[in-house]
Length: 371
Length: 54
Image 1: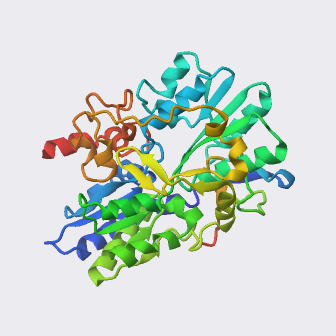
Image 2 (image 1 turned 135 degrees about the horizontal axis):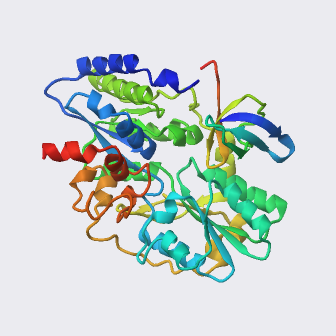
């Protein structure tokens, strides 16, 4: 398959792994963070960490869209879903994220009209088909998903669909990365940059990492050879004493990003002063809300929401996992009380979550033997 | 995904996954598109065209 098979070539993968092996200094430990949940999934699906020398450690970042949504936000969604006449729509993963008193799936079982959609365009279609109902789309995700929500809002405006609105919980990738780099908990040597977010924002927004923090960044694709090559490129920078933003995913990511997407996002969204991230707390200018021009399509304006902050469950250590401070298997409830079937934390819900990736690909068994 | 049919007036295209499943996709961010083009699609919106030469 074009664009896939050539990036899964086992022989080439072994060659890049050998190259990595030959580059690392034996006495040095290299700690690299893959920012994106899609990378985490690929790393464990293809066993990429097994190809790396023991002193190259991959830690998992905050780039899983579902994982970073706080409990209070889920509660707000459920409150809207329970309003008479509302059809509440969201992505499938989001339905299983626990709020303080259950998930959207639990609310659906209790009678709320909650429907899974694959895109905001699907939600708009439901609104057209149900003109006597209010249809709300729970918008989550980073800059990869935000353009889709923005285009749908523009389409709703252009087609004059009054019964459609959006509960906007989109987030941006740069502020949490800066927060992580400022955190005393974590010492990182470099970053595997997010591939699909960069399709939209380009490479430029990551320049602060080498400039302000002297760390290399390599934007990478999601196939095993993409990730291995990105690791090799980061290590090459470290060995040479360089730090810069490099783009391994040039077949998809232009340096300047997708200018049309950035334009439509600037029209439809504005930054919130603060947004709460699960496990990371409030981060300034890290969340998006609808701009004044689109406030009439903002579900939080149209409906009353509780807006209450709810503390994460004490047993769950998603925050430390999202910051890369602990490995998923080090969480007290990993694989016992918290499983993909009955998740306590968000990192076990989404396939992009680090805990789910570890669990689904059997990593916990090997890691526990080490302990 | 591969573009099967284009509705340029509405900024939409019918696209096909590699497994044969079909989906309507927003193409405003990557236009113009034509049948046979390969697109990177996220949440129902095409974010990039995959260029065979790259």
